[in-house]
Image (cartoon, rainbow, N blue to C red; front, side, top):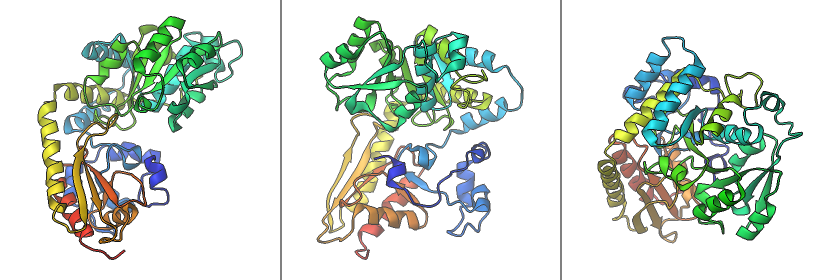
Length: 412
């Protein structure tokens, strides 16, 4: 379930894209000091707009504005915004630096992981041919199909279909190999769906190599661990897509496309700043390009073991606050198998003692003060899941206290 689906109809989410450049300049800790009440009466940019800030105990969901960028990233973006620069020159320089940092052949900063999917697909369809680039999504005379496992279909494959291609669904390896033809431009793999499909990553790459068809993997939310940033390219994927505004804590509207040098060069030609291209709408500015580079540099220098230990301690603190509640049957730590691979808290209660469902607890946390958002899960089940990796310092204590308060109150 996507957060959009889970929270449809809820108020307070940012919908105006023109607002993001303004919000990027806001220091989150400074704003918390002047946090508004429910009516937004205190100072601050969100209060002036009547938008209520939240404590993100859910994760890096786009709907919840993903992450809070480190101060160094915000400072770098501010500095980048003080001068004019050639975007092609900046993309080339930053791409080279990122490729060196990750040990991959080439890299391109994109306007999010979805943009990376579009540009990667366009690169495999039109290549560097100017005439073909200008005609997309008119595919006359070009390859028109993308192979994908049926279990790997997902909402964001719309970014691939935007190029004009048809997705050909397969299940077994034999069916996959049979479906590949002269019309096949690309093979697409959704990393988070690996457990669901019959053809796993290594075998998928093997088929691609055998048939000579480029393969691309969507790994948008797959950091941490840091090793994933180069692992999939080394495995043999020609193109790898990451979000820049999730685990990397870069600008929300940034992403990474990593892979073969010829395809990365073609991807750039199929997007901004080239005006007559299918990816022109997915513009990435100098501030986002620089911001993502700095975020990546910080991420690679981070003490990941120490950070993991800190996350575990926060989860244990939250679990400790609710374990003594009579209705709680289970309070445990878990780590998602793929994507958002960080320590989480899962709390299950007895509905006979506490007649609440997940949606009731989530609503109370949303409507309380401060507003808290938790991880989406089955709305009608007596379970709530909490992520800690996007919490700001000491916010886990607030989450623990509010959860305990809600679970001690049986009134719906």
